[in-house]
Amino acid sequence: MIRKIWSLPSGRISILFLLFILTLAVFGPWLAPYDPLRGSAAVLAHPSAAHWLGTDYMGRDVLSRILAGSTISVFGSVQVAIIALVVGAIPGILSVYLGRSFEWLTLRLVDTLIALPFLVFAVAVTALLGNAIPQAMLVVGVMVSPVFYRVARAATLGISRAQYVEAAMLSGASTGWIVRHHVWSKVMPAIAVALANTMGTGFVVVSSLTFLGIGVQPPAPTWGGVLASDLGYLGFRPYAPIFTTVLIVLTVLAFNLLADVIRDVTGEAGRSLLLRRKTAPMPATATATGGN
Image (cartoon, rainbow, N blue to C red; front, side):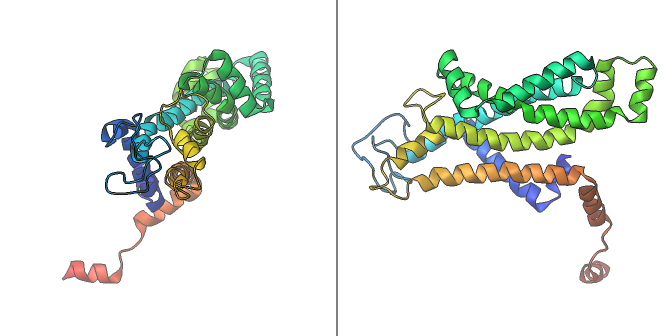
């Protein structure tokens, strides 16, 4: 699948940009030119050779805070996606095979999660469990899990009617064997699309919660926290929120673009496009050059 994604220009763009964001998340704290927690006398300074993106209201270097905060912002969204995948996809697949009682119970739980007010529930549970990123991401992941449940269940329902799956069931194969050998590989494309979309959604949620100060202990740097501090001093640095906002928007767009590419290359239309590209004749000029 990765080769198919890389063969499309939009796939290469999304992968390269997300690799850049991943690099920031891994090495950002070491690349920061200043201590992101230490202030200075240069309060609300404009961009300069010493501070490329200026300083905030406490004299802290904005670039250093963005680089250091990328770890929490990026890996927080990864944590959301993994929790949602485990909590949603596995019950969604098993609901097709474990009988009516398990199906009814999981459907009711999913309906309950969908009905809950997202932000209010996240704030309430975070306040109960403690104001830290792991607790906040756990709550967000559980709240997003209905997306994976529905996607995995719908894909599994379509595969469960296939003749080879019915033949395996009639031959006495266990549910676990059928899921591992027949269902999982067929459901993976749909789950991959949902995973990429959820990463983008999780990134927005993480940025929103840290913007409100939920899940982090000040003065820990996060992209949402940097954006919140910049918005408080627009009269002095009206351009300041642009830096963090552009990063957040481009990252979410890259995840959404990747989801679209995965959907295209795993669908019939995408396979036909890739096949046409492989079998397309070479241009006449290229043929003539090769002949000479």
